[in-house]
Length: 368
Image 1: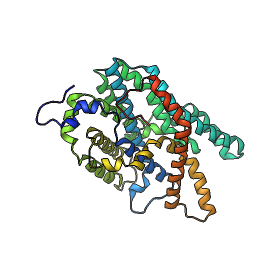
Image 2 (image 1 turned 90 degrees about the vertical axis):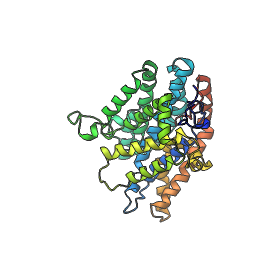
Image 3 (image 1 turned 180 degrees about the vertical axis):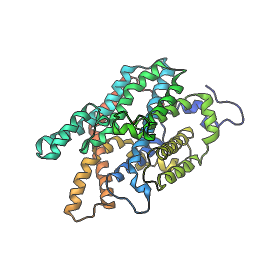
Image 4 (image 1 turned 135 degrees about the vertical axis):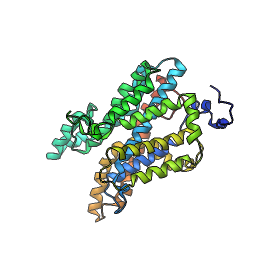
């Protein structure tokens, strides 16, 4: 499709056809890096008095969710446009090659440790291992190091359903997505309180993922693309969105469930939208800076391994009389990054190389 010739249209480099032809959304790995740093901060007690934002690193997972929803939906929508349909078989094989090898390696390592180490903690791990292996961690209470797999379970459940929905619905897709988003956003406001829902369902677990899918659908439509571009397609827009996001994150509210968390999600969505709708924006140099982009690229491995690494960093800190705070955070970041790099280069890469055999579609960065 050609760009609209009107004076309100973006430049040639920001046209709808240019957006559809992007082989990589360069800023998204940088945003992933920020998300994983927030998660690592959350899991190494480093809160700063008077700064509520420093107690909310867990929100990094929500940013991951929105990015994943956007990228997966964009990948599938472009495949449908180019090939007329979506190959469910190829999609699931690609997801398997990307996610399963590192995930089950981590589970194997944690499970082996539990078998070899007696005690109550080993029993808890054995209990949690069953649900983690089946990607059901978000359905039950998890009390071990495997508790972080709840987010991976939520994403895997999304991957199971999303391609089928995108394959079978067209005109009704966007209304269905919006309806689903409203529905999953209701529990934090007291709706369905009489139903025994898993705790993560009461924290808008699927809301951020659906927001990403909605954004992908809007930007995949030429009229919507130009309407959004007119509002947010400015070079400085990501900086404004980031400032708003940081302000909302730092708002002193003891309970951020409900509207507060929704505002955070919408600000994150705006940040992502401004970064993908116009590639050359004010934050582009920062988000595509080599080390930042690289950290984002291996952020999946960092997420998988960070609690294991943090355990040993903590032990080393205690043995060395180092206060478990900001020093431990820095140590955990670099140690986990090193482990993730080794995993990516020598273990995950052969599996990733096989993805091209199963119809990997150009035009998007790989999700996670």
